[in-house]
Amino acid sequence: MSTDDFLARFSAAGQRQPDPVAAAQSGMRNALPKRFYDTASVAERDGLFHIALDGRTARTPARNPLAVTSRPIAEALAAEWHAQTDRIDPARMPLTRLVNSALDGVADQHEAVRAEIVRYAGSDALCYRAAEPEALVTLQNEIWEPVLRGVEARIGARFLLAEGIVFARQPAGTLDAVARHVAQIPAPLALAGAHNVMTLSGSTILMLALASGLQDADAVWAAAHLDEDYQIAIWGQDEEAAERRAIRRAEFDAAALLLKHG
Image (cartoon, rainbow, N blue to C red; front, top):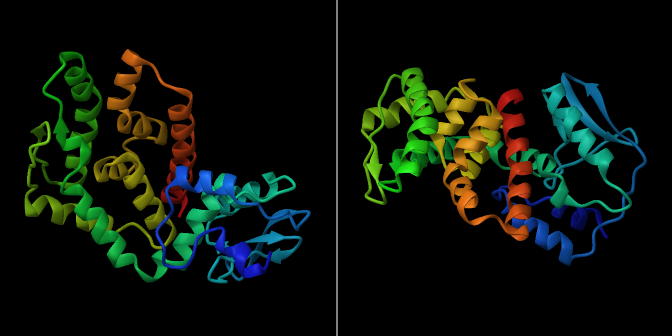
């Protein structure tokens, strides 16, 4: 396998992060590249923490150095590379793929990424509540309402709520307030993390709660899956669905790490 083919396994410059489930399935279908290094470590040079494979800086698909400004992120990246066995499986390296996306794509498109996060707030999952059953309505009020009110207090604006699928257009002032706070998220790493937290949770509000420290990653994940967990409690969860959820959780944890330390 050529170097270009190998790097392409971690996505290409400018592309969005692949669906984690699809990425895992693709990794199972295709022959995985052999591990070509003995050690994966962190090397500090020129104010950056480089991921060093046998002492040489790893590269992104666009051939940028795989180097970040945060030691915790660098150590987690090195741990991903170290954990690979005789084959390198990009599907099991969500942080590496997300950092590659940040360095190769988000760095040049950060305003478009910020705009998409703000657009998401215009139809945020936390603003759409169930009308029934009563048990689900109660759960949404107990779990979502404190998060929503906390974020509203933080940004100084209110969101409109709706029941069911009836669209609720958010006030322009609310979206402007969201935009001001999203503008403060550093690019490219934290911003890439913010975007993936938003996508995987279905909520800019939950992302802002995590970014501002109002909620931790476990609480945000639980809030994002409140409806799903309610259904699981009634009907149970099959093995395939549980596997997909575990893959998404690994992607979410990688994104949360970037949002916190990027």
